[in-house]
Amino acid sequence: MKVQRLRCRYRVAASASSLSQRELVRAWEMAVQAAGLILAYSEGKRPASQIAVAAPLPLNVTSDWELVDVFLSERTEPGMALARVSASLPEGISPVAVEEVGVSAPSLQSQLRWAEYGVTIPAGGLTRESVQQAIDGLLRVDSLPAEYRRETRVRQYDLRPLVLDLRLEREGEGCLEVAMRLRAEPERTGRADQVVAALGLPEAQHIHRRRLYLEEAQAAVLAYRRMGQVED
Image (cartoon, rainbow, N blue to C red; front, side, top):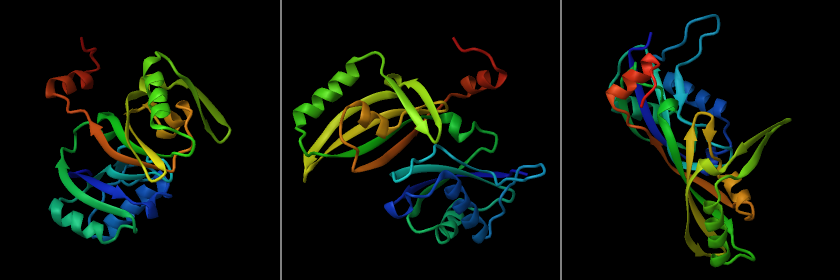
């Protein structure tokens, strides 16, 4: 039974960036249990811990702003819970804030709208002007066919609507840094590495997720969605 929902913001350093989403959720589950908190579990033949991450973090990508919802079956003080869980998480996963969210509030994934990235590109053979021209060219087009390969599956999609903003931020020490704001909704998620490829740039040296943004929907809008009515 779910009686409390805690939303934690945390960082992922390079030492933990190789963890898959399943491994990350498992790390949170074990840390919550080690902290003596009582996790809520789903019902059925195979009960699953009620832990939800906002968006999968691609492998080898670091982050300053990941979000996870943890549902508990016994209430606890949020600040105390965060301190106890922090001590049991793997190296490289660092919680920085916690807040209590209504148990029946919309899911974390359904509220996610976009993500910001800082992408470091090796500057060999590139100039600031050539990278800016590539960015301007991508932002001018209306459609950008792309494909995403995962194991034996290939998915064709239009990358352009997923790119909300691109900026060349700085140049130095043999690299260039591009800031990206990409859509991050269920079934409509832009990947920073795919944008780098679409720009015709070398493979990124480092990709860092700076922040995830959630929609702050009004109560009336949420009521419409729950009833399945179409908004004007």
